[in-house]
Amino acid sequence: MPISRNRIVIIVLTMALLAFMVWQFATIIFYVFTAVILSLLGRPILKLLDKVTIKGWMLPEALKAVLTLLTLFGLITLLFTLFLPPLIEQTRALENVNVEAIARGLEEPIAWAEDLARRYELTEEDLSLEEYLRTKVLSVVDATRISNIAGAIVGFTGDFFIAAFSVVFITFFFLKERKLPHQIMLVLTPDPYVDQVNRIVATAKPLLTRYFVGVFIEVLLVGGLISLGLSLVGVDNALVIGFLAGLFNVIPYVGPIIGATLGVVLTTLGNLNLDFYSGMLPLIGKALAVFLVVQLVDNFVFQPLIYSNSVKAHPLEVFLVILMAGSLAGVGGMILAIPAYTMFRVVAREFFNEFKVIQSLTRSL
Image 1 (spheres, rainbow, N blue to C red):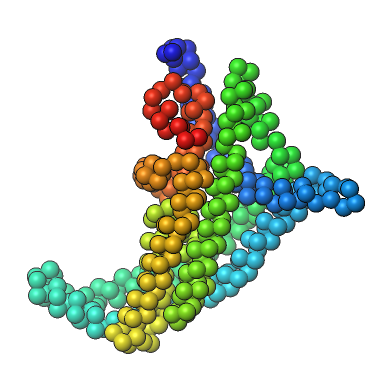
Image 2 (image 1 turned 30 degrees about the vertical axis):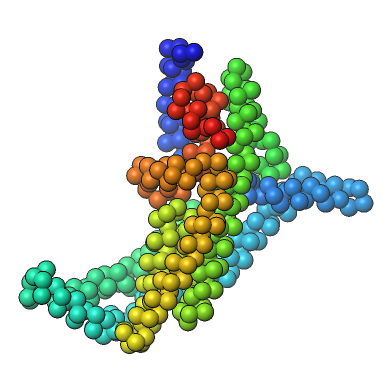
């Protein structure tokens, strides 16, 4: 049955209003969205607490919400306790990087690259690749720039605590009153569409819960495997590199490349005392092998379970969605692409199922 003109006008106006609200209240929406994610992560903990009884007395919902929050933030605190001190130490080490030592450590490969470039007339005779690299490295590890970044981080401390309090406050009520997000959606929904919204919530909640819990577990597994592998091959600060690689792995497809590149850079800067050919190059090769092996495990074991099965979408479909989201909204878009696409499919199935393309995209839901 074709869509009436009035319905099209209503849909367009509704989307325009939603876009304006998102733009106008982006910060608040971010707080609510983060709280929703945390509440989804906490659902398995809540279900476990539902089974706890003390002499036939069940735990109050408020207490279960508090215990769930404490568990979630206990895990986050544990991670930061383990990884933050060595990360700060690594950052301070970057401030004291000796550019001359880098130039000496890379003297042989630089000379080889210069000779190759001049042999094939890729550069001018008087151009020194060493001086070029020296300038680039100096600009990257400039202590003043790092200090400015540190100052900016301190400047945002107040905003961070406001955001943290807001997120914790909202998450508590989402955990205590589990149907609260659903009830809010129903209040904003016109009566003729209440049944459809109920079906959307019933379908989307388990899909998104599995996805976010799976991503959290994937970050821990990837970071742990990389840390273990780098430690076994003798890389310093393996814990820091693994932690950062695990975080970047949240960015589908591109994140592992960024993590591996950062890992190689930190490995190189931490081993400038080694001879390039006999020491540093084999160590870099071993580090790359660790990243490659972990990435293969992630691609063939972790990601198929999380990105495909959890949201019931074809891997190629997921890949194209991530690429489009990256071109539209950068890294943030890539991170949010899969949950946003999941919600789009669930909503589209309820409201636009008369279109053949929507039927094809939502067949597996």
